[in-house]
Structure formats: C-alpha cells, structure tokens
Image (cartoon, rainbow, N blue to C red):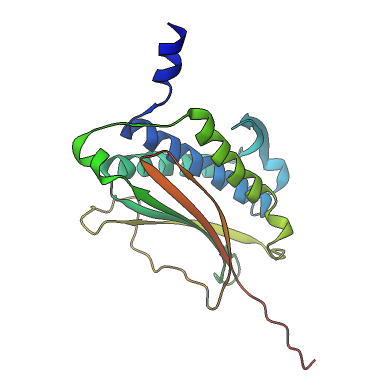
Length: 209
C-alpha cells in the first residue's frame, strides 16, 4: 500500500503542473521583491517552503495582486497558452526599467492536447526549485544595488488567440538597452519547463574620468 502511495506522488497532471508553476512564480516574486528591496524588510513574514526559509509580503495590495496573478497564470498554463512571465522592476521616479526577471515556459503540447500525464519525483522538482530560490536570495551578490525607490510590474506573453482579461492591459515589452544578463537554474515538471534569466541595466563607467 505504501509503495502505491509513493508512486501516485510521481504522477504529474496538467492541472498539478500548472499549480506547481503558478505557486513557484508567486514565491519567486515575493523573494525578488524582498531581496531587491522593492518593499521594506519589515513588510515581509518568514515561512518555510521548498525546504527553505522564504519571505512573503504582508502588504494586502501586493498579496491580492500576486494571488490574482497566480490564478490567471495557472489558467493560461492549463490551456497551454503561456509562453513567458516577466517581473519588471522600475524606477518609481522615472519609470526607467532597471531589471527584468524573465521566466520562459515550454509546455508539453501532447499533454495539453491529449490529457496524458507525466512522471517525475516531487523531491526532484523541489530540489530544482530550491536551486532557483537560492540564486534569487543571493542576487545581491551579482546584481547592482537599487539605490532609489522602485516599483514593479508583471508582463505575460501568451499565444495571440488568448483574450486579454479585463484586469490586464496591452503593454510594451519594457526592455533594457544593452543589458547585462545572468542565467539562473531551470526546473521541469515534465509538462512545463521554466527557464529563468535576469537582465539588468548596465551602468558603464566613463574610463576617461
């Protein structure tokens, strides 16, 4: 009986995979907002997730935004319509884009079309997510200091036949000219593969001065 229970945990369905990825993005967004000091440290509370200490915002407006976002992401993932999600950090004063946290998503089309499932250990998926979360937490060591008040936004890249929900608006891609880039680890549920890349504004030094 115990072996059957263990085996059942390794079955990944489209719905289950969408839940894993949308929850991951919610925790990753919280970690980015905390570690990049977009919101004050005291506005976050510590929880345990993925076998790691994680921080979640206690700001009600941000909690509501991320909760609604996770639901919408999950819906698009189950439909196989989501290509990438980008969390953008901008200067509050000027709107200049300072960082783009890019989560590119590859979806197993056969699972969406035929409703089949895949197999992968829950622990293996968690280890892959842990590696990404550790990189986000250490981002202060490889990203420039954000020394001005910042705000964030989230962009979703979907298939062109997706109707835009009324709570979303069409947006420009909020790109950074000549950015520096750091590729982070990826994780794969066997249905959705998520590649993570952060690009940031490159403040070039004037060598003549």
